[in-house]
Amino acid sequence: MNKYLDIAPEVKEALAQGRPVVALESTIISHGMPYPKNVETALLVEDTIRKNGAVPATIAVIGGRLKAGLSHEEIEYLGKAGRDVAKASRRDLPALVARGADGATTVTTTMIIAHMAGIQVFATGGIGGVHRGAETTMDISADLEELAQTPVMVVCAGAKSILDLGLTLEYLETHGVPVIGYGTEELPAFYTRKSGFGVDYRVDSPEELAAMFRAQRDLGYKGGMLVTNPIPEEYAMDKAVIDAAIEQALKESVEQGVHGKETTPFLLARVVELTGGDSLESNIKLVLNNAAVAARTACRLCE
Ligand code: PSU
Ligand code: MN
Image 1 (cartoon, helix red, strand yellow):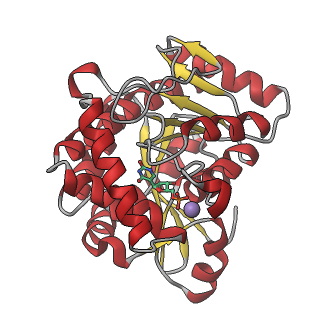
Image 2 (cartoon, rainbow, N blue to C red):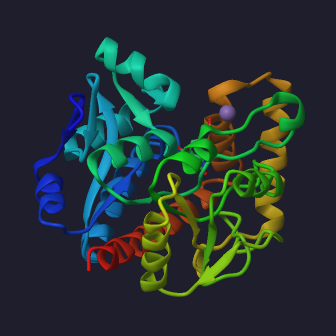
């Protein structure tokens, strides 16, 4: 085991016994949602994983230790600290570890630490991708590169249209990452069920997802798999409302010169403010929906 890694006792025991475990990220807690909804959601997601037969392992960096499985107190701390906690991507782990610092893990670093711990399935809300205007800014999330090189299944609700979804799919294709639609042929766009872009394969059950992931491992691929699970119909947002909020947030980010790692948290927070919290409720529901699919798939993978 990596000398910087701490696996929570419950997670360690489940892994040793070959029982299902699902990883969860912490940037969604500290940078993706406001306090206290973020903490409530994080705990609710853990409950959902348990109700669906798996053990949750929320991942973060605390005091320079890579943590797979957090206590309620640690989740509360990350939620309360919010954007004061460093958003930790791949490039940040060496500094955080060396300095004994804290970090909220993105999809990228959650995949890295999950894989170190031996966890194969990870549930979140949305992934990072190719940003709109990337042809000049070169802002492409490290999440895509990680999906190309780390063997973890990431279950999400697609990507927000703060990104260029077409270019994000092109990037994933180039890097050999299978994009699966769960019960859909169309890539979901996070708040809405449709994006206008197709996925590579549609699957309709956790069994099928487990079979594809197993085949990917058996083929010796190094990378992971992206499962996109549409938000339940009743919680989906009106496309015109969410598109207008995203356009406004993007416009402000350009005007204010927001760039680098700040871009995504800025856009996420502005969209929540501009939609008066409706988008936050949708966000919570879709994460819970993804947690259930991830947990059921992790169960099938253990059979
Ligand atoms: N997109 C969302 N919600 C999120 C994120 C992205 O809809 O919470 C977070 C995730 O942690 C993701 C990270 O890994 O932002 C991507 O940041 P960047 O675009 O800077 O790579
Ligand atoms: Mn970026």
